Length: 379
Ligand SMILES: *Cc1c(COP(=O)(O)O)cnc(C)c1O
Image (cartoon, rainbow, N blue to C red; front, side, top):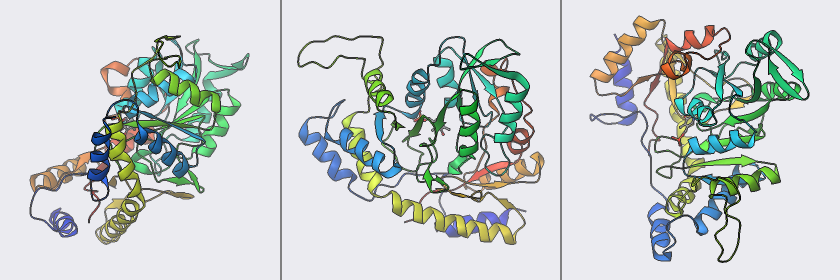
């Protein structure tokens, strides 16, 4: 039944071998910069490539500041701490996300609260958020109190699923009204825009990931972006063991973290960032080909939502129901074409089963139907 799909994907990637979901591409200055990095002996936590990367990514996204970190999860952890998330607080997020979003909340000894997503963006729904806030929350002394649990909601972490921007402007406006700090999980959306503004720059803080499967990679890595000078300084301080700058003294003024990105990884990343525009063009080409094919074969393909520009990091289809989804997964994977269902909802994982949830109809609907299909940049 899915033979035409398998054949089409094989023709796109022009191979009879196994087709992975997403492979990195290193066709620019990666080796040159890595060699320069090794020759400099600055391979570890300080070095010119870290600084160059921070400047380049700030310029690219339009953020005033960028702070490189060891991965996307640590970027989220530090951003939540800077949003004043403390033990016993709550953080609103979407149940349809990668587990790292919720792990970072847990590292602050806070708990997630799950609010539904939109079907088209697959990201946090402003209407569901508004409904949740109106039903459960009140503002008291400039903080948002959850009347149902008696806890304070400090932050909200919307996520741009597979690189498709959620309606972040509306989410930010709602959170502002309720004195909730927005930390944008833009791990998947480098190169994605909402109304011409780069994702990750709507929130007080935004985070990116450069893990091996993301649109550009440093092997492992991440970064925080913010327009706030004070938060940027604090982010650098906290991610570098809270060492007080001094030529020789080793003094630390709080419990910090060793969350720095090594210069070696930054060297790889500077080269990758130079190719981002090319990667984005190729991804748009691939998604257009998919779109045409699936339109002719009556399978729903996920395209960029209105008022936005997606990076099309991971392409996705929406099958009719769980049974058809399972048949699709079996047929494609058996034929050596890697496909993968969207994440299990976070509220169903044992660690987060106790979390408060709004109505999660759209998240449940998507969980049963969405499948990612091969999305590597074709050279
Ligand atoms: C990849 C990813 C992260 C975290 O990234 P790491 O760099 O692997 O720590 C966080 N959130 C989402 C939604 C992601 O996809």
